[in-house]
Length: 105
Image 1: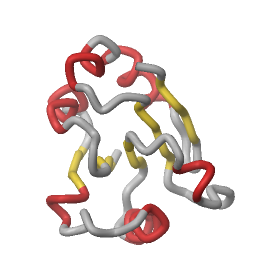
Image 2: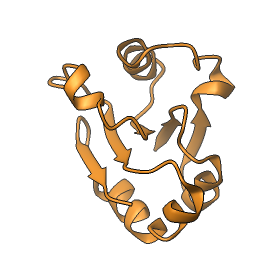
Image 3: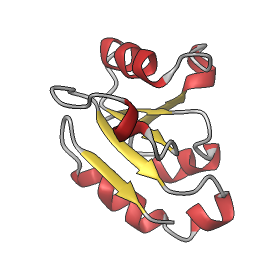
Image 4: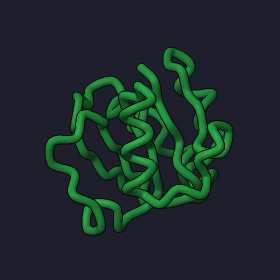
């Protein structure tokens, strides 16, 4: 699976998703895109999943008919995210195209 980390997603999480190809919006030069633009370029770029910490995403964007799955981490704190690694890994493995899941941290 191709995974894109949005700004704010703790980059060390990448090491725990080693079965997947993980890139960041920063690495792609997409860090200045707003969410609607980022969703569009991620889908066009062949990404399967966006992991973000933007809790307002579903209220700000029309997510219906998207092929890109979205996981929202409800914290940007790496020490707190670390405590939920197994949950995050499980959600990544089961989320389908166009899926949306928030993970309490």
